[in-house]
Length: 183
Length: 275
Image 1 (cartoon, helix red, strand yellow):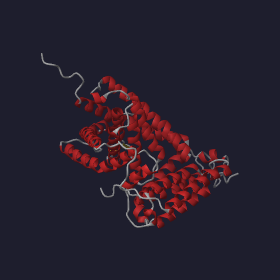
Image 2 (spheres, rainbow over the protein chains, first blue to last red):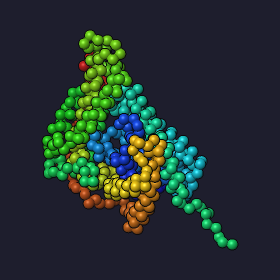
Image 3 (cartoon, each protein chain N blue to C red):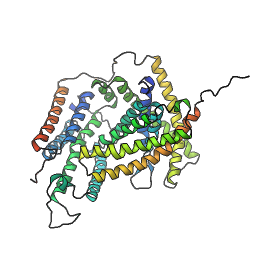
Image 4 (tube, one colour):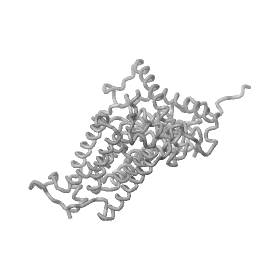
């Protein structure tokens, strides 16, 4: 786990800003009415994978809070917390994956996707519905159905967007030992 | 860009409260409204919240768009609840009173309608206060106020920094998106789902690359100015507490106390008129 230093602070801020802008202004229609694909989770997964779980949890928390804050429809704490949990789990799961060192191949992609699927399932099918039941006493079958649908959409979005971002970013970083001494 | 957050600058008693006070009150109030399902208490919270709008000089027309959005959301949610679990009220209140002489799975019961009323009131109790907070709190002061309530300043600073860079990221996203669209990527309904996600990625990759560079530059600049060297820092937007601040916080603490007390009086989170 990386220390919460200056770089982590800035990464949190920029991560939250990216999460906010993509969540607030970028709507990709999914084909189902009134349901947009949340590509911001692809970014959050990527940021958490590169900078670790603390940055992930804070970027999710701040970014999602600002989205709700700016829409002004009320802050839905249960979903804000679920976003933060996703950032946390993605960061823990990708601990020491070393994307920053240019290491992201097939194995990395498989690991990233297993981690993001588990993280999304825990966030949207466990954390968000349970909080909805605790806070708003909503019926269980309704919130779990909602959770399953959003988990499915988010998994697809993160799987495509997040994985491609990791590949693209890792490719720009020169690998260790890529320079050879001339004979 | 100006209306990114819905801050409305008007002189009023609520605007004069410090950001920290408003944040503490928001958290306490939301907690009280989330915790209890007591109908009477929720009515009191809703009415007080709406009255506070007048105190804050916020007009209904300022927030009508947001209210409309919330209302639509509530209606959709209520319908979903009714369709998926038309007996939820009975499960909660323990009795089953059919109305209008009908019976069957979707027949209306008094308990279900009462549950829906409470569900509605629950949002009505918390939404005005959030709208009020959003409209009367300057976002920059918000970051300063986080530090005031003992959030470590590194985190409060991250919030301030995020606010600073949101317009930049937005601008950049817009530019990249226009450039890529000029090159022929398709993000509308015409393209297939995976196609759309791939197009989104071709905008995101340049955005992420420049953001990673930005992180590097900003953190180097902060490091050079020895950010994080001292245990404390001061905030330009911070203000001192005055009597009104303490009074407001005390009132909100009382609200939470009342919510917790009602929990014991009612023997649960629900107020049950059916027994």
